[in-house]
Length: 390
Ligand code: ADP
Image (cartoon, rainbow, N blue to C red; front, side):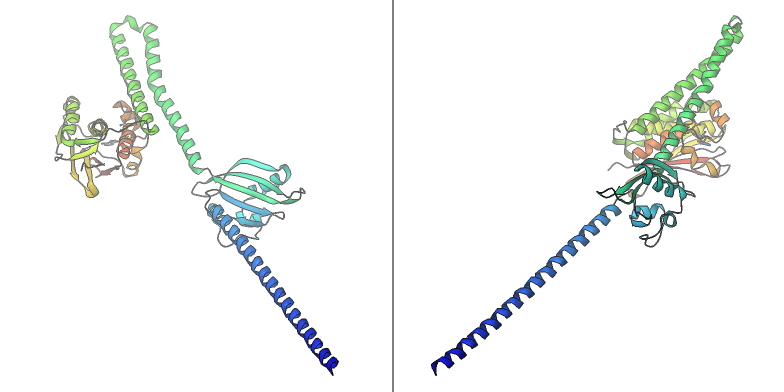
């Protein structure tokens, strides 16, 4: 009786052990599967984060970046690229020519494929506004030298191109401005040496021309040095509270003789205003503006300096004449270096073409603005602002 009972108990125990063991295995398997799923999930999230970081990094670049696969289809394009080529919608998967519509870029990609890389290729995009790009391209290859595609980096060169052009124009203008008085000095000196010196009357006249042109060269060089110092940022402004009426009075006094010779009346209506400015530079601004007003104003006319306390703690000063004024299309341009409405008249008056460019620089370096208004036939009024003293 005992044995059958023991056998039943042993069988029951074996069965219990078997089910317990299966349940344990299942639990372990489930927990292992859940761990793996979590691990995969973590890896996917990490990869997505890296991709998002890379995209954010590329999108924050000012250079355009374009990655193509081996078949020449877009794999990646950053935001700067989309802006440069004004593309809309997703570019991924699109053929290069369809994305950029420029054969020259397709050729760069082909050259990068053949030569490994293309460096500093310059290209002007068709249409307006003017846009210049510098392109660097490199073929992408795997470790086993399999061709994977091409990466292109586009750098916007427009500002540099414009600066380069401005510099070239400036050098050409300066050379031209220097050449005219120099060739006059040379010509008159040669004529004197060839015999004119023996006629005192002629000699005196020629020497006066030489003197006048030497003075013109001197003025031009002084103005060029001022412009170059202002542009290089070497000029340190000595900012102090400056009472403006006495400064204006001093400037007008220095023009008194020239104004009287033309019957021009000089008037100072500036109220008691104090600017936070460099007194010497403010004097230079007023002197250039009064000089122009006397030069280009009307014989027998009036030149006045006035002003007011304007908004935001600024002081607004004006210099007004009652001459012929400035044609509407030239109002913006008169502040450009060497721009003159009437070249012959400016030269005849001893102008260098740099006076207003200097005015603009000085005013802007004080944080102010300068502009001119015009009533046709009623003269020009130049305004500028300066920070007021607290
Ligand atoms: P410039 O040495 O020729 O006077 P500026 O830079 O001082 O050079 O002035 C540029 C041009 O602006 C002048 O050549 C002139 O044509 C014009 N201009 C300046 N001020 C006046 C004014 N008050 N009335 C008329 N034209 C003016």
